[in-house]
Image (tube, rainbow over all chains, first blue to last red; front, side):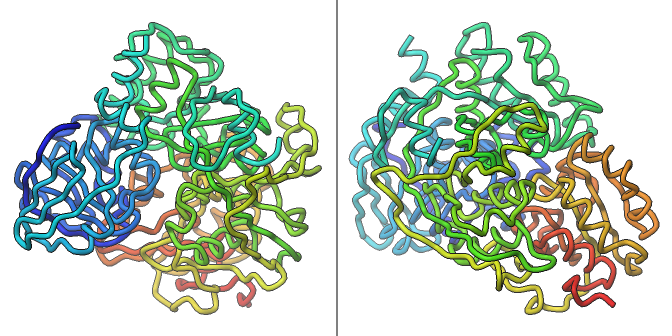
Length: 165
Length: 418
């Protein structure tokens, strides 16, 4: 997930977008990202997924991904075609899960506040920049801790452990 | 045993750990359930180790969508069942042995003070009530740990929760934690440990402490932890775990903040939709009309909870139009409730008695809400749509309040029942 430049439309969400909203528990009977992705954010808005195009970006407020430990939440986000999640802050378990499944997530309170729903965004993961092409604003994202970057560069925890063998 | 970082340091082979440090640590127990285990097993298989790190330290509990509600959930359980058999997992709970995992594991004597427990379930933090460092992770972390016996951790900062006074009638562990989440907010403890200290803890039962630690995650915390007092030692002895009293003592980095809770003035709390942090004293909760009351879950499915519900329901009837669902949290709780005659009280009141399952708590089955319906529930989350339709509502409370509210049909302080 490092090195990519991603472009897509922003879907702006509020604070405390929890994993029950991202993927209601009743759908947790499959591990298939595409199947899970068909129900992305159904708890928030049943019509949400119909508006998502491949490459789009979720922009949340504080405490994104709070609640249950279900790894199905970042899988559903990936499966629906979302390229990256930007938020003011992330809940702890969701943060680890996203890195483990290779979903790029960027913590930037400035970007999360400034980006409007529907804005076109360009995200450079290697450079750590978010560009709002609609407003022309640009945001720098602090680097991940070295250990986390290692996990990301390996393609998640399982690949990281395999490399260590 | 002392506070969270010390436990973590010991499992990482370190003298001490600074808050924020990332370390790899050996775990004592690795847990998953019928929702999270299938994904964990897929990741485990990718590592190709051919065996689990210790057949006695992997725990699999089929508790969420069981007894299976549909074909897809049955397939998931069948998949986990095959894995448990193939890899000789000793602590595999299926059929009549199933309890709600966080009610079951302490009763099974699987939780020891000072141990490091991870589970692919966010409420794994429950075990902090017995002095363990226990935290929820995702399926990949847990799948990897099933193979390696290790996981990486960020050493948490700690918040001191100082509990003083004596519990008032009808208040308990649930009210302590709802009040605390109300003070902290749902992300007020993110990355932190909640460390419970103070003279007031002696007045909170072990069941009540399990309830309080269970909901540490609802403030965003990594874990919640209590010291081990005589009550905890006696509880542990009753489940076959030898332990000594040990108070929580801070390490050299101490606490980032402190909060006080005075039990003398703590009223039963109700968390209004749609966040657990919307806690108000029961008397200030709106008098909404209720359709359902749920008493159970990993938060409040223990003996104390079952007895409290019965105490309120004895000689009373559930209001017309309200469905009361009572879910004893484990086979032991189920049997004991039956032996103590609580089932007669429940049935006379007009309640439904469910087998142990997570069921309605997460909108799985056994009590799903229709559009516009409202439930009061002793569970842990009242997020939008958590128990069913996205236009339904959940109010969180302790078992006495949930029982009293089932009797009147609206949110009710049990002290006010005639």
